[in-house]
Length: 533
Figure 1 (cartoon, helix red, strand yellow):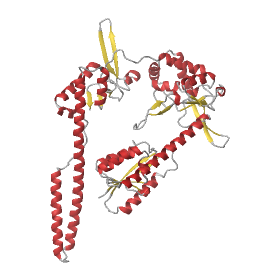
Figure 2 (tube, rainbow, N blue to C red):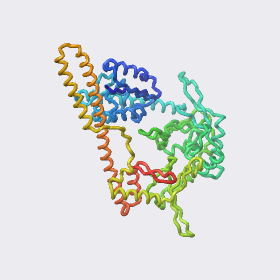
Figure 3 (cartoon, rainbow, N blue to C red):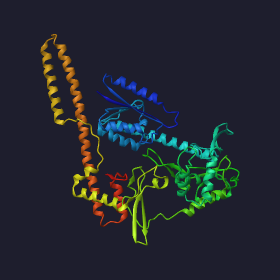
Figure 4 (cartoon, rainbow, N blue to C red):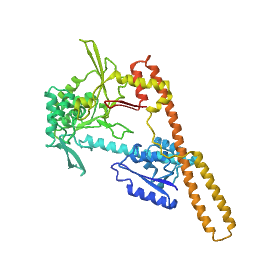
């Protein structure tokens, strides 16, 4: 029974690529034409609004997992660029194809990707991938260039407008429709309160976060305000007037100024493009990362400013004055950057020295509980030395007995009821012997009425052999996984031993880095410590 996966993907905001429905239909037509077995098994994998440059797509990962677990023999897709548009990614995928003996069929590319490809066929595959990557990169360049030109002309380039603004459609001189920012009277008071509280309330960002939490003051969308969100809003250049002062400020930062200084007339607001980007490949929930100022494009927008330049610069100056040296005098907590609270946040280290009693206090604490209160997290702070020593003792136990490491390795959920290889092999041999005996009987039946019963039994036994061989293949996959797990276990054991040896002789930074490298999960739930390697 062939196990077939049909994969379809459509890029975000792309009207040119074939629809998901069309890709699936073409895949089904191919499968039904060339795989006519009535008992074939088809599984569908659909990634909609996903870029070919991102290999961490939900259904693509599900497909890879099924492939590695022996649930697929054949993968059918519309074109090879549906799999991905990066030559490096394709090369890695090809290794997986060879490893798991999978056949990949891009219907429209007229090639069949499999283990025993000729050098010419492999070359055609990579040439196809190169052109797909070139097309993707050229598309990115064209879109980026177009966005930059729009931004330089003061038009909004997409995305949600900042709080206090909404979007308005206008028609330009060349009769094209563009978006510009206009004031939003419903959300503007929210922004003005942030400005007033920060400049005149005498509070830090963390202080404002706590204040707003107690007052139940939330964003216009109803979300709780964090200090980082307040910072993002108050440093956004789109609110400020484009005048000589802001021109000089952003030019001194090294930003690209899209218009000359005389264009910054103070009547319009600034428009900033390229300040942020996604955190990159492999993150399912991408965080926004601030680009260096030299990547920013600063221009004059079509909108009216909400705050004047002196107010904006006063806010930025306060941020500068609030900057502190974050280099700790006392480096504590070998699990810093590793230990998480049960709510999911990284726990922070805290050091305090009581001069009167000459006592040191060292703790791990959850920042969510401190800032937002017990309704968001009820995990209390915990003595730092107790947690560190518990991990150290666990590692020392492992170093003395390698088998102890099994307690700290995440379990792989292996299928239940797996038979021994020898038992399946014996059954295959026995069934094939029965087929052989029945075949001999068929030769001597000489057209008698018993022939059709013999043939029927042979067909049933043949299906049993196929099922048994499939079971044997699954056993092989599981055995390979167990071998990989044993190799991985030895590697983890070596890392633990390295940490134990380093405890007495190496400095804090090295030990902390070794902990980050060795531990995959470390959670304090308020009562017990959970450690996974």
